[in-house]
Length: 366
Image (cartoon, rainbow, N blue to C red):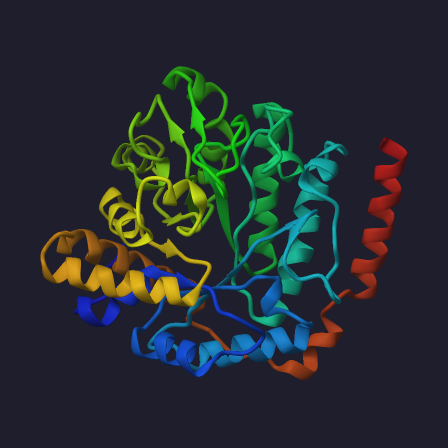
């Protein structure tokens, strides 16, 4: 990674923050926060969306607040039940259903089409694909978000999904490292535990993540689960051992992002502010928050802890450099979305015909 000169920590600490916002337009408080604190990215949910033109207008407004480089504009657009934007977007079946065709080519094409529609509205990061293996049939939090119930089925689809997203012009994120598919608890509500040996982990759960890394995935999302084989005390998202495993053994050189730090799994043992600091110390490069108020409070806490030297300067510099370098590399040709063009790019006749043929193939296969 080449460097970007003269990092001003106080000015750029906000680059490590991805915040949610409250509605379909920015509030004055949200605009001031993004602008004054030089926030790194925004994550968008269903409550931020009414139609593609509104979404593009919102994203254009967000990007007007950028400093040198555009913000990450993220969403969860996996297909199936996890797709934040539906009105005028093509809605494909779940990853699990799509994988029944046993066709990486289909997975590639679907993800390219999804990325094309996201990019048309200004979204530049899709928090997808799920690399989790649905090995526990009682696991509902992952379920059909997974490509399959064994490592080989998931492995061969993950690469196709990532390549498809990239071909459509959107960055990709593998989740939820090192695998959330065999747990019983839902980390949105409580902290799950996974008891396995490191050998079993490497032969099973970690196989699709290794494939994602080899496929040049841009982001890796850390799960809020405790995996005994890696760290008996800390959830993966707050574990230095987990981040070291990813960096040193698996040679992941992209951006490590936390899952939402407002989830119940984190709140069992930590305040959100404490968890934010622990995640940075562990090696996270981006901190994700569903609500703007929480992101704001956490950033103020981090500023204090940085001034008190509770967080190492080199660690912060490294993460800021990684984010700024990726933005410089991927977003240097940024242009605002030209809203009159959007309607011609959404649910095109090509996408509609493809979707119809795909549904027909799936019905014949079942």
